[in-house]
Amino acid sequence: MKKIYICIALLACLVASGCKHDEWFDRESKSTITDEQLWNDPKLLTSLLANYYNRLPTLHGVFNTGGMTELDDAMWSGHRDQNWRNDYQFGDDYGRYWDYGLIRDVNLSLENLETQSVRLDATQKNLFRAELRFIRAFVYFEMVKRMGGVPLVTKQLIYDFSGDPTPLQVPRAKEYEVYDFIYRELEEIKADLTANNSSKTRANQYTALALESRAMLYAGSIAKYNSLMPNPISTPGGEVGIPATMAADYYNKSLTASKAIISGPYALFNENPDKGANFYDMLNKKTGSEVIFAKDFAPGVKVHRFAYDNIIKSMTEDNESSSTISPSLSFVESFSYLDGTKGTLRDKDASGNYIAYTGIGDIFAGRDARLYGTVIYPGTNFKNNPVRIQAGVAVWNNGSYQLTTSAELGKNYTDGQLWTGFDGPKDDAMDVSNTGFYIRKFVSDASAASTRGTSATNWWPWFRLGEVYLNAAEAAFELGRAEGLGYVNSIRARAGFPANSLTALTTDIIRNERRVELAFEDHRYFDLKRWRIAHIVWDGSESDPNAVVRGLYGYRVVRPGHPDNGKYIYERMRPSRFRRARFFRLANYYSSIAQDVLNNNPKIVRNPFN
Image (cartoon, rainbow, N blue to C red):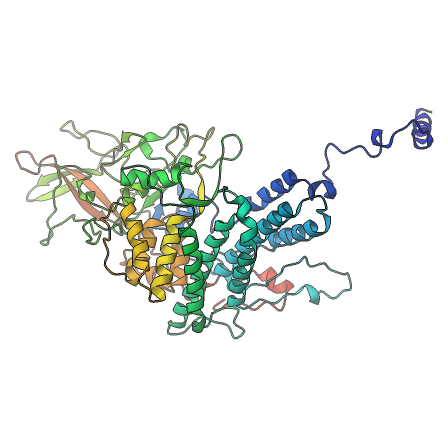
């Protein structure tokens, strides 16, 4: 009977003039957002964009410690169940990225914006449209630099249930066609992005130019260096491989975009007179004018655990935090001396005898300040506290030194002085440096940043001015223009080198500058690929210092009565946990396409070698 009364009451509301529509059926839902609300509310659209920005890809993901040890100048020193990272051979699918889910979401959003955003003013609509197209261009760049040419899909594909899926099977575009699409998109939208020019976390005019700067440099490099290979990597349809004749145009486009940014509102970060600390602060502090576009983090909203994963051993704030990235000796030696000489550390003299140093950090004196800003090495500080990196003692015995380490970190030797530092290094150890070095770059020094409860909030740089200077230098150099020299010298001056420290550029100088300036920022792997030298650098040779991670251990000399007593000597070593040299094959220049993609679309051409 109660049900009948309810039905009668509802019917009465429908026909009676006293019942208002907004009281019942036209009342706005408290839990559901309608299309009309979404596409006409700037705040809701901004939230939708935030979701898409959050899905922008990197090779392994933002602040991915394990990925950095696979492709940068470092080894894994964390939990043993992941020690396979030190035996890593790049598989055919390494770096694969084929995200048409995100492409579809963006395409659908663009279409809805056109048809349903009737209450947005033209400026708002143009801005949201431009941001969506930027995200799509970014995703296509991330796909083309891994996969080569990919299907260019710019509208949603809808199945008509006819039984014929052919209209949905889009073939791969030529590799250069994808780069050309990216360029056209960015050129068309950059003016509409000026409303965001004050933002570092949403695409703006200069963010579009930064993507142009990077993408066009990649295209130019592939056009040039792929053609110089004994057997250029290509497919008959051009899905892989860019004609060499296109290189100059791409380099010109990269240089033009770079110069527009350099003449814009940004400046190289230079707020701290201590050049090494300044380089660290550049990405640790959310101040200054170098960062163009970043993925941001905030307490209680979104945090990351990079400090938790990589805090130096003696400064852990959480009983489960770790020290998993151990930078390589080869990387440390890529930072040259300020007098212009190569960065090879002077551990022995010409006769092969140890060189003894008064302080444990003296061997690193006079170096490019970016070394300090990137790596924690013996004799330095972190969080205003001295690090305790010492491998052991060197005891003089029968005409030679006997190098010994303590089984226990932080223990003193029989003479009452330090034997092995609490920060190691220690061979075959877990959660302590295995090479003699820790990573400093990106490891937040904020209070409790290395704890699970608080974590870190420093940002991840998608684009910053330092890269743009190097992009400009490389493009200018490839075009035979002298202006590239000034860009590199500006970067070096910020690192403590004298003004105009270089008088000429070479390919090796440019490539090494990128190695030291952009370390651990998701560039190294792709730089080596676009220059077509990855298979040379990571050649699988057990004697190659770049294919094999090596370390440098410092020992306190115990030689009473001798002038070297109490000084420090250094020994090069190969960590036991680094099992096998890295081996990059020709097949790795383009990642394999997943079998399900090939099965679903017979028009998709396989990549070479797989």
